[in-house]
Image (cartoon, rainbow, N blue to C red; front, side, top):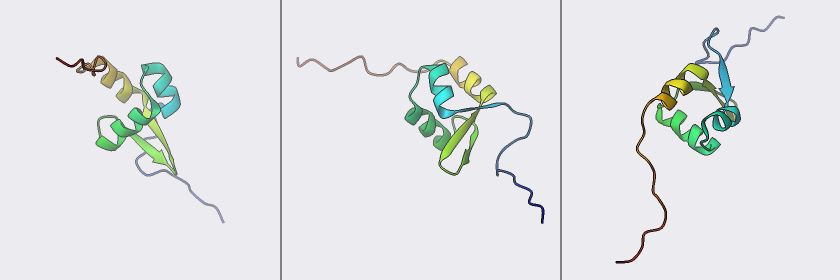
Length: 77
């Protein structure tokens, strides 16, 4: 018996990175990468517990300007 395995949502010819590789490339955390995937801001697919991010989606996301985060603790006035 021959099994044909495929992953739902995976496109055959698009290169992808693990969340760890994408985090190293972007300077963002792996948990933030996962959040972006769940929110639909990055394109990718999930294999069991691990997420894989399409390289072109990551590059497009990094090319966009984003609002900067907080600058540190607020001082009391």
